[in-house]
Each structure stands twice: as structure tokens, then as C-alpha cells.
Image 1 (tube, rainbow, N blue to C red):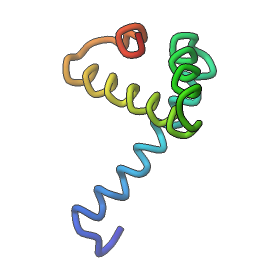
Image 2: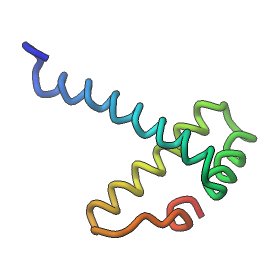
Image 3: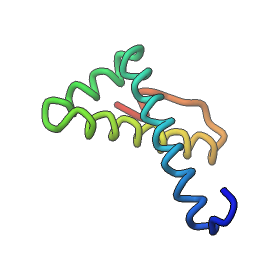
Amino acid sequence: MVGLTCIQTTAVFIKYLAWAFVEAANFAIRYNETVKKYYQRKLAKTHMMVAKKTAAQKLARACFYGLRDNADFDVNKAFG
């Protein structure tokens, strides 16, 4: 990343972070019934990638608030 400004570097890392949350959403959809029901509900109304991205955004938001408040993850609070 030699020669990149701070803004360019941040933009590069945001792409990787978004990818990581989409991968986490894939596993959550596969192994958690609450997340799977949320995904199926979104999938009925929108495109597959939009539904996955919304699940990833909910995971990201839950991660942010969990880190900020030092709280454990509650799937019913995040997706219920």
C-alpha cells in the first residue's frame, strides 16, 4: 500500500471488511435458524445478494454495538 493516502487505504480495507461480513452472513444463514428465517423473508422480496448484504449489515451493526457496549451477541435482538 505504498503511496496511498489515508482515504484510499481506508477504502481498500472497507472492501475487505464488507467481504468478511458477507462471509459471516453466509455461515449465519447456513447454521442459524433465526438468521435463515430473516434471509428467506428478505429473499422473497429482493435479489439474493441484496438479502445477503442486509444480513451482513445487521451482523456488522450487532458487532459494532457489542464492541461499543461490551455486550454479548444476541441473535434475537439483532434479527428478531
